[in-house]
Amino acid sequence: AMNGRPGPVVLVLPEDMLTRPVKAEALGRVEPVQAWSDPGALRTLRDLLLAARKPLVIAGGGGWTTQAAQALQRFAENWQLPVANAFRFQDTFDNHHPLYAGDVGIGIGPALAQAVRESDLILALGPRLGEMTTSGYTLLQAPKPVQKLVHIHGSPEELNRVYQADLAILATMNAAARSLEVLTAPTELPWTEWTQQVHQGYLNNLKPQALPGDVDMPDIVATLQKHLPPDAVVTNGAGNFASWMHRFFKHHGLAKGHKTQLAPTVGAMGYGVPAGIAANLLTGRVAFTIAGDGDFLMNGQELATAVQHGGKSIIVVLNNGMYGTIRMHQEREYPTHVTGSQLKNPDFAALAEAYGYVGVRIQKTAQFESALLDALARSQGTLMEVTLDPEVITTRGTLQAITQASLAKR
Image (cartoon, rainbow, N blue to C red; front, side, top):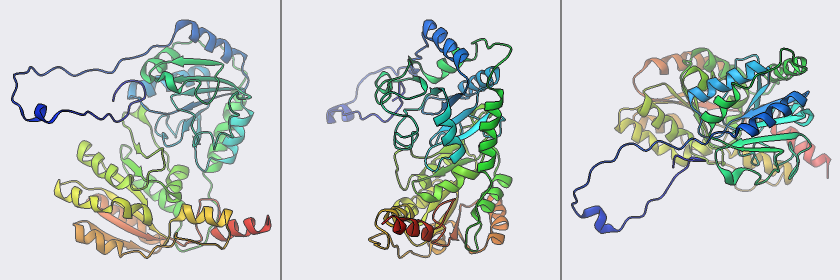
């Protein structure tokens, strides 16, 4: 549960062990084992850095602590390295930092995707380098990338699993980052301009495209950025709706002391609502969840859990009347052939009221800010149903444009 790549563990016990009284002394807490980087490997890593001209760090995965994130930041600052966060680990490195490069995942910014391809050294610190982080194994060529690859991970089974690294280091994130921060950098580095260019690409990606409808989602996210406290926990499930937060919301990151993003890396719909409720109950911090209509219907009943245990969360349900991601793929692969992706939705605001949340309906951008401020101020949880034009299928384009592009190829 705690070592290597942390994850769920099933314990199977005979029934009599659960019912028979015994005399037993409670054991102390078991701390996870730290695996440290090999000193020889660190020397090799430094040599690879000194030989590079366009290095790029991709940080993420499990096992990060505040101390590890702070050590990563010091390492990046010492070497002036651009740092990108892996898919749905956008709080690993401060998004406001001048070395931040963006997130490497679904809907990756075109400039960052190009930077990954152009780089001559990838330092993957913690991510598995799975399908989502590599854009379906296209950003990095498998099994041997064109770029030099240093892969640091806490589980040996992940190293050299898909990609053959030039240097594979078995180390937990806290130990790895603390090892990296003491690597001495030269006084002059040849990639200063490259680092600035990569960061500028991230800033350019924050400029939204014009899209139809009465709800401006980049403006909605800007309002969230303005009013949510820096330590607010932001959660989501799986679907195109999550890309609005992924692209436009800026996390302060673990280096500031708090984990602020909870999101599934395996395409699990329905994760965001219970994750937000659990985060609020456990930490008392503001929990904000963005959900799609189909996504919310997976686990919306957990509002009852929040009310029962005195918790609250703020939930935005983007209602476009369909499973948006599936519909997008249908139009891309089988244009005009729509099957099973339409939804006949309930009145989400009324449903929230039935559970004990406050339900609000948002149909125009101008209605959102006051509704958010009210939600932050009240002791009850709040669900805001935002009516989104079905044409607004991604942060970059419309459903019609996808259909037309697909038809043009046939």
